Image (cartoon, rainbow, N blue to C red; front, side):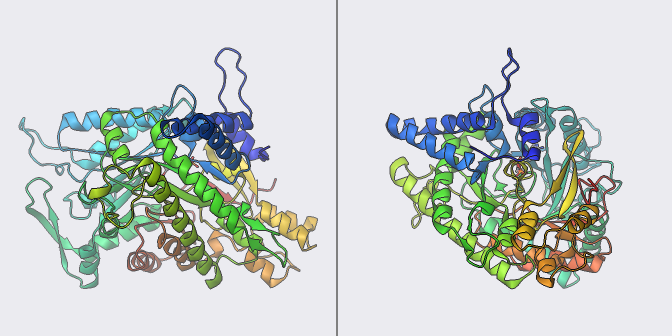
Length: 572
Ligand code: ADP
C-alpha cells in the first residue's frame, strides 16, 4: 500500500482523488492508482488479449502504488474519469490574423481547463504599430499575450488550479525589446513564463560585438538594427531583476528535432522540458530515484539497477498506452500527437538519491553519476520503445524522421525531465533533478491559498543512521533551512546537505547539462543564484548553457520576486 506523507495527502485530497458527485465520498490513493492503471491498461486491448490487459494493469498499479513512478498530474487526475485528457504539455500555433488568434485562445482555454499547460510562439504576429487591413495600427505580440494571460487568470482547471503558459518571441522580431521588458514591473503576464528564442547567429553576434537586425515576420525585411550586446544586456538585466525572460536555444533544439520534415520547432511547453511542433502534445512521467537505492546511508549502499530497468520498461509502456486512451481537444492535436507519439520519461528524487548514496550534489562524482544514470534510462527507454515498435508498429511519421532507418521506434522521443512540482510532493521526495531547496521550507501557492511545510526526509534518516540526530540540530534546521551554522556536525555532513542557494550556479548547470546529454527532449531546471549575483554571473551562466548544449535556460536570483513560492526556514 502506498505510504504517502501528510503533505502528499493534502495535495491528493485537494486535487487528485476522484470525488463521487452524489455521495461526496472520494477514493483512496490506492483506488486512484487502480483507476489510473486500469484506464491506461485498456490500450493493451488494441494489441493483445484480455490477460495481457489485466497483467499490465497490475504492473502499472504496482509501480505507482510503490511510488517508483508517477505520471504527470493530468493523467493521475483524469484517467478513468469523464475528463480523459491526460497530457500535461501542448504547443499551439499563433498566426497573424484575428480569427486565428482567437481560435487559438479558445483551444488554449479548453486545454487549460482540462489540466494541460500551453506554449505559444508569438513571433508570427506583426509588430506593434504595423498597418492592418482596416487602416488601423497593429497591437503587436505583447498586447495579445496579455489577452491570453487574462484568459488563464479566469480559467481554473476543473475549478482547482490556474493554468500555465510559455510565451516565446524570436530574437529577430521587431518587438523583441518590448517582449524582453514585458515582465519588468512584476505585475504583467503573471501566468506566463517567457523565453526569448535565440539562435547561434545571435550568440556569435554578441561575441563579435556586431549589429543585430530585427526582421518583419511577414515581409522578411529589415525593420531596425541594434547592437547585439545592448539587446543581450537588456535580457540579462531583466533575468536578474525578475527571473524572466529565460532563453530557448532554437538551433540546438532543432538539431535534435526528430521530425524536421514535419516541421521546425520554435516553442516548448510552459516549463520548458518539451520542445514541440505546432499542435503537438506530450504526456510525461517520472521515476522516483530515491526508491532506487539499496541500504541507503550505509557503507554497503548501492543503486538498484535491476529495479530501475524494470521500472523504465513498464513506465515507457505506460506512457505509450496513454497516447491511445487519451482524448484530444481538437483533431489537429490528435493527428500530430499520434503521428509522432512523443512521450517524456524523466526523474524525481535525484537530490535524495545522492544523499542516500553519500555523494554531495556539488561534486564531480554527482555529475558523472547523472550522466551514467540518464544514459542507462535513455538506453532502456529506447530499447522498450523499439520492442513496442515490433508488436505495435513504429510511430506513423517514422520514415520521415531522423530515426529512420536505424532506430525503429514506437515514439519519436522517450525522455524529458519535468519539474515534478506536484508529483514529487505526492511521492514525498525532492523535485526533479534539483538540489534540496532547503532542509526545511515553506511552499506557498501550492493549493492557491494554503502553504505546505516541508522538512527533508533524507536528512532525518541520515542523521539517525549516523547517530547524530539531536533536538538542537532539528531546531537549527527549522529556523534556518540549512546546516551552515549548526555546530558540531562533521564537514562531510554539511557538504552533503548543501542547499540550492549554497550551490554555485555552475554546479547547478553541470547537472542540467549532464542529464541533457541523454535526454531526447529538454530539462526543466531552475538555475538558482544568490541575491548578490551580478549581471556578469548571469552572462556567464547563459553562455555556459549555450556552449554546453542546453536547449534552454531559466534562472532565478533569490529574492527577485516579491512573492517567492519557496522560502527557506519555517519555525514550525
Ligand atoms: P506535475 O508535478 O503536476 O505533474 P510538473 O511540475 O512536472 O507537473 O510540470 C510538468 C508540465 O505540466 C509543465 O511543464 C506544464 O506543461 C504542465 N503544468 C504544470 N503545472 C501546470 C499548471 N498549473 N497548469 C497547466 N499546466 C501545468
